[in-house]
Image (cartoon, rainbow, N blue to C red):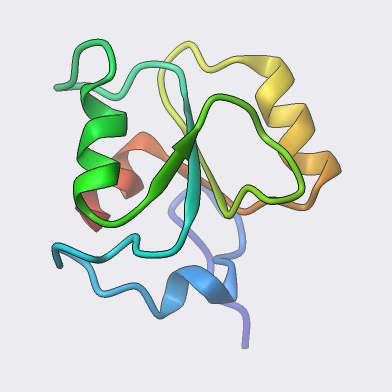
Length: 98
């Protein structure tokens, strides 16, 4: 049975196993963040993702594990995520993970 986010998007299987609020909740994931994640300035959201084990990237590629979509997100990154079938989550869902 497929689970869905509050936006009606299916939750990717890789995300179901994440241990929320754990210091290593994003371990091993290549995460790209686009747009503004409320409560963070500049690279703070990327730094926080790295504290939780993620490797952050500036661009979406076939190696990207997760795209975080914040306020005023870059359309090109969203299109690339769709092209590469990269799972996406909202900034709110990202905050719930960390």
